[in-house]
Amino acid sequence: MLKSAARAEASRKDGREALKAALAPPKVVAAVDLGASKVTCFIMKPEGVRKADRTLTTCGVGYVQSRGVRGGAIVNLDEASDAIAQAVERAENVAGVNVQGVTVSTAGGQLASSRVAGRVSIGARPIGDNDLVRAIQNALAQIKLPGRRAVHILPVAWSVDGQGGVRDPRAMFGKTLGVELLVVSVAETVFQTLGACVERAHLQLEGVVAAPFVSALAALEEDEMDLGSVCIDMGGGSTSAAVFTGGSLVHVETVPVGGQHVTQDIARGLSTSIAGAERIKTLHGSAIASANEDREMIEAPPRGDDPGAGPVVAPRSLLKGIIAPRVEETLELLRDRLKASGAPVEPGAGLVLTGGASQLAGVREVAVRVFDRPVRLGRPRRVPHLADAASGPAFTAAAGILHRAAFGPREAVSSRSLASAKLRREPLDPRANPVAKAAAWLRENL
Image 1: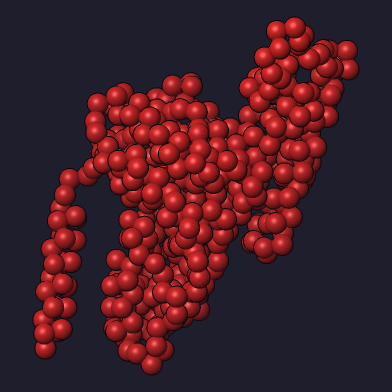
Image 2 (image 1 turned 45 degrees about the horizontal axis):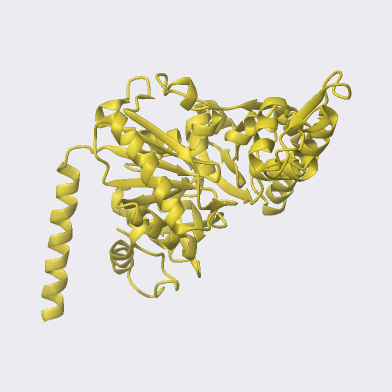
């Protein structure tokens, strides 16, 4: 009796909190892209969303050189938290607002995706929200993710009486309702480290999102999502891909190789410093051959602080010979992983390259050769006012977090709920009635 009363009181309290959240004024959205090369923060006020033409206006942008992050993973908690705090502070100064919580994008944490399906019976009545919850819960009951944390739970497709391709089944009639979900997850330990890093920066973690997914939301057009497309986010520490078909995300893949590996190869090959290699890559780097590159010489600063050491001089063809194999190997590795995963890539799907490493000359041409598909370079779209310094491909993920907050897509479970709850490690009792299953799922996830 006491337990029933306690549960009823907890239910009323949850209802009051949900009502307060629904009635509360829209809040400021802060997006943090935690990369191996830089940490970026975009801030957007509620009035920055224009639903008429689906454009966004940021009120503050800040970015600093990344520290404490290598290969898409945090290797020094104090340095990474300091970098996040500095990026957020710079954006706050421009925006004139104080940020309490942030949503963080990452391509690390061994990103992985899996698809599950669920089906429930419907009575002689229109399909409602409760039926959608039942179908989602039925699918989630099949998921086992030991040692992992879900960051996205996205409905890929709905079906009514076996008829697929339904975007929104509510108010429709049928005997059965089916749903296919895509669950994107990261390693639990990586998730907890991200949370600790954000807390050390005196901020709340409002959610973790997959960098290739949000980059695709910012870089892809609606037609590309519907007809099929692969968005490849080429970051400093990793290269990741988001596959879209029929307007929905259907697969996520990542490889722990990025632009920083190219820089390190140059530093080793030319016996120069990391800073010198980055400068040479930016000014003279290319992944394809060019005219007169054998006769064109480049200079690189020597390693160390020997004042008598002269600059390293090498033909530009040597630089191209270092860059091209690494870029080609990275894209081939991603292509092979996509094939091995069985990701449903449409035959006519094009590629969109984004991320800081995609700006290297010749990368698009190499991608065309490796994937044998049309390739274009992507950058944040529908954020027209961004300054040139913050409107390039390297800032696509941060802009994508704002797109997701403003325009969706609608997810089965909110990022905040996923940040504070885990999926069931074991399926629910199949003999339990559907209402009990739905209640249990809601208690765990909402």
